[in-house]
Image (cartoon, rainbow, N blue to C red):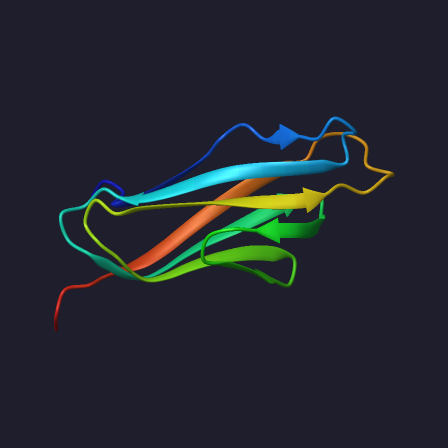
Length: 107
């Protein structure tokens, strides 16, 4: 079965000073039926301090969780995650996501 709920990240935007990074994300239900209990978990490595979130998102420990009770067929949602990078950071910063959901079919 093909994935019904898919998400994407745009290339990160980095401040001129190089100390703040923002990711724009989007999620869409490509299916023909609504889905429920949708949770998109964003994990940034190495660990950063989250500065600002948009969309239905909250910081939970070291990750950001975006949640929807229902995502209708064809429905799309978007948001951003902004993080402050540590001064001693070397190497790259990466964001990875994982989405889970339930089919909304009646029992």
